[in-house]
Amino acid sequence: MSVVTRFAPSPTGFLHIGGARTALFNWLFARHHGGRFLLRIEDTDRERSTQAAVDAIFDGLSWLGLTWDEEPVMQFSRAGRHAEVARQLLASGNAYYCYCSPEELTRMREEQKASGQPMRYDGRWRDRDPKDAPAGVAPVIRLKAPREGETVINDHVQGVVTFANAQLDDMILLRADGTPTYMLSVVVDDHDMGITHVIRGDDHLTNAARQTALYRACGWTVPEFAHIPLIHGPDGAKMSKRHGALGAEAYRDMGFLPAAMRNYLLRLGWGHGDDEIISTEQAIEWFDIDAVGKAPSRFDMTKLLNLNAHYLRTSSDAELFGLIRPLVEKTLGGALPSGAADRILRGMEGLKPRAKDLNELAAGAMVYAQARPLPFDDKAKAQLADGRDILTAAKPVLAAVGDWTHDALEAAVRDLAERTGLKLGKVAQPLRAAITGSTVSPPLFEVMDILGREECLARLDECTS
Image (cartoon, rainbow, N blue to C red; front, side):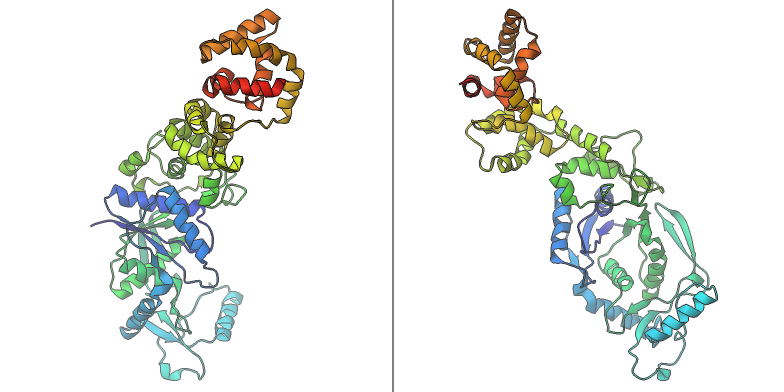
C-alpha cells in the first residue's frame, strides 16, 4: 500500500503551532514511507473562512519547508460531490430523511437533560415513512448508524479505543438547505483523495468512530488513524498565546530558522532515544507515527531559542547573510553601503555565537553595516565623554600599526595601556564605543580587523575632532 497523508486546516486564522506539528508529522510519515503528502483547505465555514487565512497557511507551510505533492483541494468546491454521496446513502437505505423541526429537537434535548439521559438525537425518523412528514419542514439527511455492538479504532498512538455504538447517534450528513456537514465532507474527501492514514489531534478521536460508521455505510476502506495529543504550555495548561500559541509567520518574524522549528516540533511528542538535534534527513529516516507518545507535550520557548541558536551556529555564513540582509537594510532604511556585505560575511563567525535568533544576528551585524556618522547609544556616549583623552592617545598608536590584524591591534592597545598605567579594559571600552557605537559588540580587535584601518581611524576621528 502506498502511503498517502493529508493536512486539512480550516482557513479561519493563522497556521498555529499545533497545526504546524500535525502537518510536520503527516509530511514526515509520508516521506519516510515514500508516499505522498496532500493538502486540503476545509473552507466550508464560509462566514469565517478568509483568503488571507488560506494565504497564511500556504505561506507558513512553505516557510517550514513542508511541500505538498498535488494541488491543494478546496473543500467547499466539492460540495456537490458530498451531497451526491448523501443521496446515494439515502438510496441504499443507509441514510434517511429526518423532518424534526428545530423546536422539536430543542424539546427533545430538554427532556433528555431533565431525565438525566445523554443529549443526542433519538432516531425518531429513522424508520418512519416520509409520507408522515409535517408540511413546511425541509428535511435533513441523517446516517443510519449501527445501534448495536461496538466500533473499535486501532489507533497508532492511542492504541485500541472502543466506542459503544449505542452512544453514537445518527449524525446529519446533509442539512435542510442542501449543504453537507463537516463529517460528511471529511470522509468523502479523504476517500476521494486516497488518504490511507489520518494523522490529526486527539480532539478528533470521537469523530473517528462516527466517520468509521460512515465509511462502512459507503462500502469504503476505512483509513488508519493516529490521534496525536495536544500541545500544552510549560505550566501544563492548554496552549495559549502567552505560551507561544502563535502563527508560523510570527515565529519567522521572531527570527527562528525553519530547520530549528522542524526539529523542535518533531520533539514535541516524538523521540529517538536521547537525540535532541535531529536533521530533517534523519527525521525522515527515523520517523514513524507509532513512536508518538500519548501524553500531551509541553511547549518551552527557552528550549526553542536554544535549539535555534544551535542551528544559527551551524548554518553557513552565506545562508545567514541572505536571511539577515533584508533585516539590516530595513534598519538602515536603504541598501547596504559599499563594502558592508563583505564585512558582514567576514564577521559572521564572530556574530553567530552571540545570537539566538536572526533578529539578534542582524542587530549584531549593524556594527559592520553602519555608515558614518555612527549612531551612539547612551552608554557609548558616556564612555566617549569619559574616555576622550584615551581616544586621543590611541589615534596615533593605531595609525602607526603596520600590519592591521587582530593580534597586532591587540598588542598595540595593550602596550598603550601599560604605558599609561591603565587596565586593558579601561582603554578598550572607549575604543569599542567609538568603533561600534555601543558598549556591547563582538570582540573589539576582531571588529577592528574586519572594519579595516581606514574605517576605524575615520570613526576615531569623528569622536575626537
